[in-house]
Image (cartoon, rainbow, N blue to C red; front, top):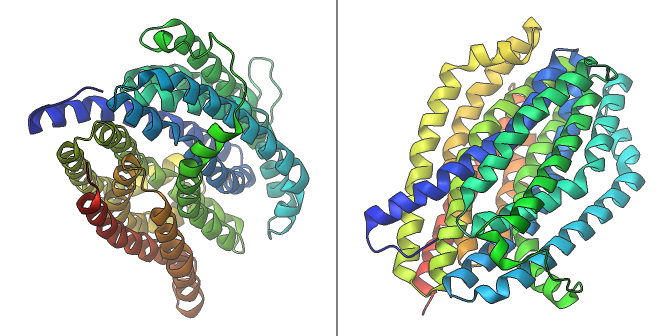
Length: 448
């Protein structure tokens, strides 16, 4: 990141930061798409098992990644304030925190995974795939969260191309390992949907090792000597990061977990409905990477300017990012509608799944606009380190308004499973409206 002095310079720098983040996010999500699509070529049971596993995994993944995202505004503001000497300590403590959280999640998964799956009304074959898909993913958890911490540090310095290159290297590896372990090629066991979890865990490990090597050896990261000098874990530093990270993590968790909750409600329907719902959600979520990438770019750019007490510049970046989100969300909705038949055929060869998935995708068009507007606003607020109110907004809009609306529509009208998607649209729209009101308040009340 560097200072800019005109709107054109800001737009240019924002695009330079945004495009690599977008490619990185799409690459990360495509790993999940590969899991779902390739498992779907084995059987509907494998597709449904990976779908259920993903619906439980994604909220955990995004929630914990949200906690670790605290390092981005911390590093961005320190960089903007020219206090770079404090950055290595913060990154080291963030890495310790990532490892500690990973170990806690492994223990919780070991204790409660069976009980959670037993609560679901799913067929034994689907439950088997879901359980061991998640078990395999858990083995790569420490590497995944360590990589995400390193990536947040790299991106906060404005070096987003580096993260992009790591993911572009890892993505074909993930597809190759899927091909090995799902279908039993190159001497590997044929594991079906479970093999997708094995492939992802191996990919996480490789990505983590590569990111550590780059931070340790390559400039400008080497100058920070993150791995050169040992420092002890600091509880006070962890608390400082958690004060920012926990609200971010729970905000993201509330948003992603409502999608998981909808999937769990839909698990009461037949396997065809589960498979069609999750495949549609899987594809629609690719387009969510657009506003998510904008939000991450806004956290970096707004945080840099706020750290340097350049509040007018921070406000301009917010406007640029939110406007971009709305335009891209409109384009996304059009593409989803136009490509819905071809996409459904890509995900499954079952005619019933194909027809039902197309109907789900029509509903997906409508929550693209709310996501495209609300998600970038969250990123701008994180740049200001305004995270606590956002947590409350997310909880109310998704869990107090969105989910109950979906349950009511699904059970009191003829929409059935589509009613849950209507609830998602209502919750996202409510959150977006409240978030813009909060951002306007923060911009007006922040003083130098």
